[in-house]
Image (tube, rainbow, N blue to C red; front, side, top):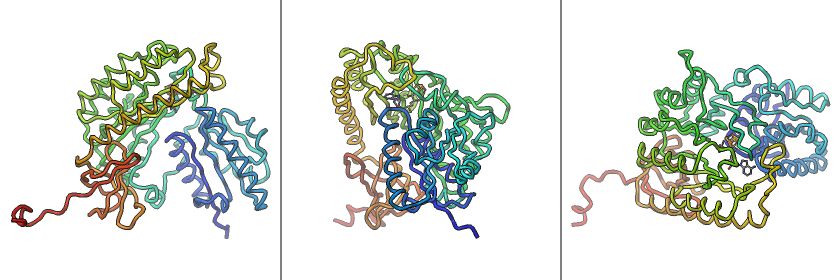
Length: 458
Ligand code: SAM
Ligand code: SF4
């Protein structure tokens, strides 16, 4: 009988990669692979990589260096595969720079992993970065009940891939290809299966998720709002989220969905990148500062308790002090509940990389520091505003100490609950008692007393 083989997958970058890693693990489970958290005992290591910034891409080569050393020292015959966007963008370069790599596989070819591995197992060095005509989702198997359970009650579901927006700083349109939406019927079937296996919260993901326009069961294109309306009808599905959105695709029906669908969580990641119209134009974002602010106003009108997070790039070529000040001003005006800020990283082949007025590194660092400080204060103020409030928490995993469970608030904050009268997978009303920098703590309201407390104390 064939020995069970061990698989170690490491994901870098965005949630799309986390989802793709799970689907690769599901595909390889059929080939007899079980997952391990220890690369040293793995028969196959997959690095699922990110190419969005230079640092992210370089991390892969450092990791490959470590793997080569460990493999030599152990005299092991572990197979090493590189997947994801670095694989797509630099397939041949990876093979040249990292002889430890046996297989390079781009994001559109994961369904071919079993056959590619068989070739690599025979000593071939394999590169597959094609954009095949067949839909990989038709060939990627569903997770087993045990795999879904192990991943917890909150799951990702890819509904859309690729991007046609061509922001001048971004590699996604080149590494992930053109925008493609999955048919709504297939998404609904996958969601129903996941909910049947115990999932309570689904995050619909896509590089440009609100550009979703998949074919509906009626043969007509469905918008993301329509898709979420149908998903909200699945019995047992308590929460819905979607990410990442582009301001240009926030249609009226999507804004209305925030008002009409109680399952849709009141937390939206809506990247703005800059508060300066000049920079937004240079970035080819296709929206202005004012249209972003108008969207924020409309979204908050639709759902009063909606909180926002965002992405920012500082030091984009041509960004002046005044442009950067406009970004700080926008942050003050919106009051984000969380956000990511990045230094602009020139990516080979993107228009902005060749722009003449690159911002010096020390200026980028200063601006990043100032923006992060402001964003942290904005997040802290939001977190603090929840002190004493009662929020519904989805319990997701055990905490560090006995009796503790950790869950997520509607705003994606980690909430530690001690001795909850509930289990993982349950939704529980929790009153927030402590607000820390990385998580909140709370308690479930005490069970109802037979007499009012005042009467007992009297
Ligand atoms: N599709 C999303 C959007 O339209 O905003 C974001 C996709 S990207 C994976 C995530 C974030 O990485 C972007 O919002 C942007 O802030 C950042 N990013 C992308 N390219 C970058 C670059 N060249 N340098 C620095 N940050 C970058
Ligand atoms: Fe990249 Fe997002 Fe712009 Fe598409 S919309 S090019 S994924 S930043």
